[in-house]
Length: 266
Ligand SMILES: C[S@@+](CC[C@H](N)C(=O)[O-])C[C@H]1O[C@@H](n2cnc3c(N)ncnc32)[C@H](O)[C@@H]1O
Image 1 (cartoon, helix red, strand yellow):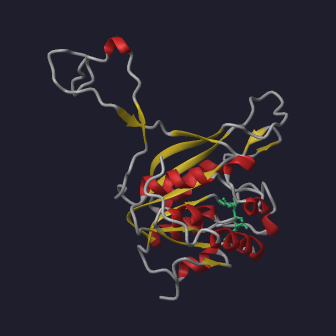
Image 2: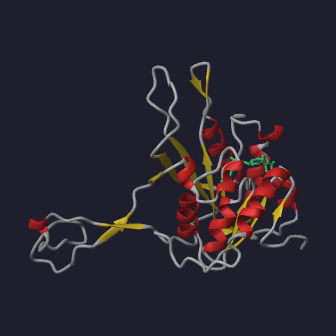
Image 3: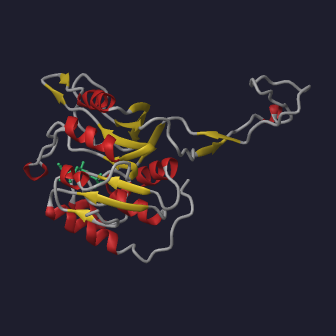
């Protein structure tokens, strides 16, 4: 097998995947170049081929978290994100969950007769049923007056039952993050024009993988996925077609190689 973990391959991700055996990857977390939003040094990508290859290299029960949005062209949204979702379904994946990455502080812009654009999709595609799910949770705030109430398995308040009300619940599937300079403390990462927040990567990797699982990012950019995977004790590898961005990512990650691992990021 001509593929190593802990590496960012400076090449088209299709070439990297071609060297992987079937079922090699537990989770892919990535944000592809879409709608020519930025030039990315002139590179483009074919989503149909990439989704088919991702299906082959994903383990049974593995997931692909695909972070993508749409551009508005001549007053019309491209719906590229949905084209991608259909391509992944066509390749064999289930559309397990359509999550939203909402931006607390979106870049101010004049959106004409539209509200300010403040989100991207985080499609979670799965190869069969996900084999791992470590849900992030939040405390349930209960009104004082209801604190002594019991909740039945069907959710009804009823003092006659002794089922204790749960203290926490799974998060909703809209995740909110700061973007821009507060999304990473690594100045070097901002040499890349389109990073996603480190916390997003931590949350997704925590949810869908366990210690030692293999996480892949086919569009590694500044190395956000690699950094989060490394700090969470996962194995990782990536592809990035631009040598300039590979340099940024490698320098960024090198600073964390000796850092203690994060047990759980909530
Ligand atoms: C949206 S950026 C990813 C940013 C990354 N999530 C981060 O936090 O830094 C997409 C990246 O894909 C790279 N890219 C574009 N086409 C590619 C291909 N076919 N194979 C590998 N990388 C590619 C671009 O150079 C760009 O850095």
